[in-house]
Amino acid sequence: MSQEAEWIDQFAGLKRLPPDVVDILMRNSAVVSLPSGSRIYGPGQAPKSYLLLLDGSVRVQQVSETGREIVLYRVSAGESCALTTACLMGYEDYPAEAIAETDIHAVAIPRTTFEELIARSHEFRRFVFTAFSTRVTNLFRIIEEIAFSRMDIRLAHKILELSHGADDVTSTQQQIASELGTAREVVSRIFAEFQRRGWLVVTRGHIKINNRPALERLASEH
Image (cartoon, rainbow, N blue to C red; front, side):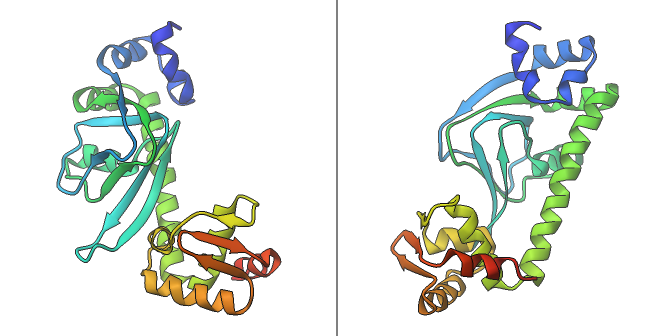
């Protein structure tokens, strides 16, 4: 494979494409770069390209009229955005926000090429629909957690996840509330109870874990 086509190796499903389909993909696609903080898509915008992320991280979130944010999912290297896929296939405008959390590099496949390959190639269709199905399944899990899981359990799990095994977490209460799809006031009340129990200490933008086993016991409850 030529040097310019090496990005295909990051996507297992694309490596199975026939040579003629790879040729169409390479001739019509472009590698794009965006700095951290860039708004890739926003509400009311119609996606013009199918994006495959080569490196970096993209946060997809929903923002209410009151400014409350809910993080729906993140797109990492080797992945695509399910909402972009849905909008391209349904000719709909983007219903959320996609924000570059880091500097990113991505492959942009124009709508016309995307539609041509969907119609022409079984392998390309399978690649797109498999990625879409996986993301939708994960979205339903998030909805189930928001609707049915106790917030104290979810918060304990999120703190442990953000700690990466250390005892210090750098994050604001608003950021955590957005990750959990709840209000900052809810997170603050639970943090106050965790502090009362001596499990952690919360300061501005920082969390110190004092009793990891207690948080792990709570996070494991159902």
